[in-house]
Length: 89
View (cartoon, rainbow, N blue to C red):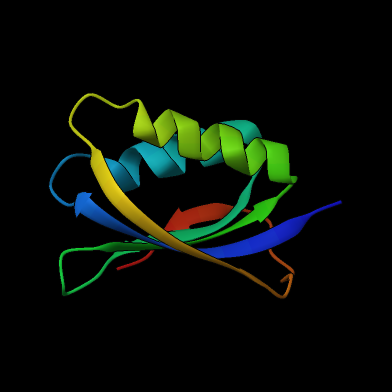
């Protein structure tokens, strides 16, 4: 059963390829949603798919060499009709 999460990432998450890695892996895993940098230095994401697959994406991001996630704030939100995962500006 698909879910959708809004996640805010804090730490060393800008200027380290976070959006690139998130987009690449989310598309590979068949997830939908978006990711973007925020003015406060955090990164915001909405991601939709099976919970275990979303967990795979998050684990992948934690394992990236230059990304350092110190804290995440997550909440489940309503599902949306969409077909892809993309970077937002």
